[in-house]
Length: 545
Picture 1 (tube, one colour):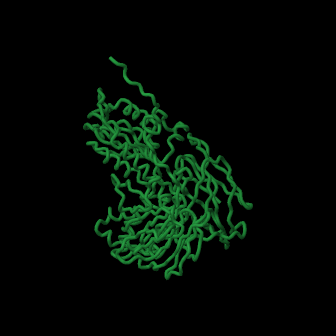
Picture 2 (picture 1 turned 135 degrees about the vertical axis):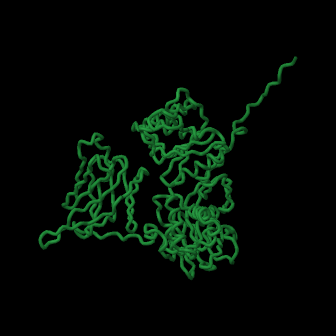
Picture 3 (picture 1 turned 120 degrees about the vertical axis):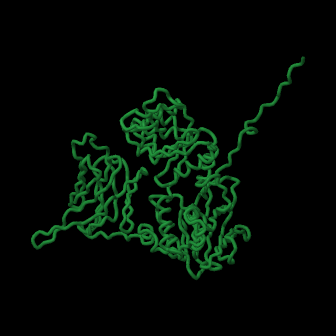
C-alpha cells in the first residue's frame, strides 16, 4: 500500500480568512423629513465622489433622487413645491463644505437661521423649502456600500430594527445573527430609547414558542422577590390561597426580559443567579425544583461594570448575562432617523389617517432642533397629541408641547450687570462625581446627568416675598429637585429675577445611610453665600438663598 501523498505548499491565511468590509468615514447628507409629506422616504446620500451638489425642485409626483451630472457634479431633486428649481448649491472645499443659496424664493436656512452662504459643521440642519437635511462630516459605511439608500428599501427583520445609520444597522445585524440562539443579550441605553421594542424583536426572530415576559426589576419589592419570580404553592404563607406560577415560569419556552437589571435588588440578584446556573426554580412552599427553559434578555440605562466596581451588582451575575451587548443611542444622537421614526409612529397610531398628516415648516423645524431628553417615548407622545390637536389640518407649532416649540426660540445670553442681577457661577464644594446640564424650555425644566442617569426637576424655581412693615423684601428662593441614588445638586446659577436660566451642577457623593446627619455644603459667589442642604430621609435637595 502506497504512502499518502504529501502537500508541498503551505496554505495562505488570506485564502481562508473571511474578509470583513473595511469601514471608511465619509461625508454624508441625509434627507430626513419632508414637512408636507412626512411618510415619504428618507434618503442617505454619500458625498465621497461629490465636488458640487445642486438642490432643486423635481416635477410633481416624481421621487426624490440624487443623480450625477458629470464628473463630481451632482443634483438632488425633491418634489417640494416650496423649493426653487435651482435653490442652493453645496460645494466641497479643501477642508470644509460650503452651502450657498442661489437666490431662492423661500431662502435657505441652517439650524433655523436664514443664510446666504455658510460653512457647514457636522450635524447641521439644512432647510430648503419644506425639506430638511442633516449633514454629517464622517459616517462610517462598508466599502461596498451604495451611494444612496432610500428608507423604503430597508428590509428590517422585525419592527424596531430599521435605521439609516450604518453603525447602528451593523449592531442590529449582529443582534439578528444571535436571535435564534440562546446567547443572552444586554441592551444598553437611556430611558425611552426603545430597549423593550428591540427585545420584543429578538423574541419574534427567535421563533420560541413561549411568551415574552417583561419584568420591571426596579419595581420588585425586596420582601417579595422569590414569590414574584418563582411563584408559590397554596398555603406557603398567609394569603397564599392558590398556586401561582411566577414570572420566570411564565416565560418557560419563551423569553424573559429583565428591564433595568441594574436596579435589581441584591436579594433578587442572588436567587436569580441560581436560575441561570441550574435552569430551574423552586416555588415558595415547594420541596422540588422545576426545570425551566428561558431565553434571557436584559436592559439597563446604567453601566453595569461600574455598579460591579461599586459593589452594587454581582460580578458573577454580570458574567452570566454577558453575551452580546447592544448600545442604543439617545434620540439626540440619532437625528438622521427622525423622519423614519416619525413615519413609523404615525403609521402605528393612525394607520390610514397617517397619509393625511402634514407639518408646517416651523413645526417640522422644532421637531428636528429639539434635543428629546426623554427620547423616542417623548417623540411618540408629542406626535400623537399634536395629531389630535390638529384634527384633520396641518400640525402647527402651536400644537407641539412647550419644550419642543421653545427650541425655535433659543434663550438669549443673559447680560452680567451686578452681583444682584447678574449671572453667578459659583465654585463647587465637595467631591465631583458627575456633571449635569439643565435645559430650560418654556415652563418646563429638565436635568440630564452626564452619566446618562436622568434627574428631573420636580418643581420650577419659585420666588417668595415677605412683607416687613412697608418694605417688600425678598424671601427664600428654593429649588426642589428629585435626586436619584441619594445624589444631589450643589452648584446652581441664578439671576436677579429669581429664574433658573442656566445651571452648572455637580453631584456629591453618597449620604449617611443611617440618616443621622444632615449633609450640607456652602458655595460662594460675588459676596453671597448659598447653602445647599439635604436631609438623608428626604427625597429632595434644597438650594436656599
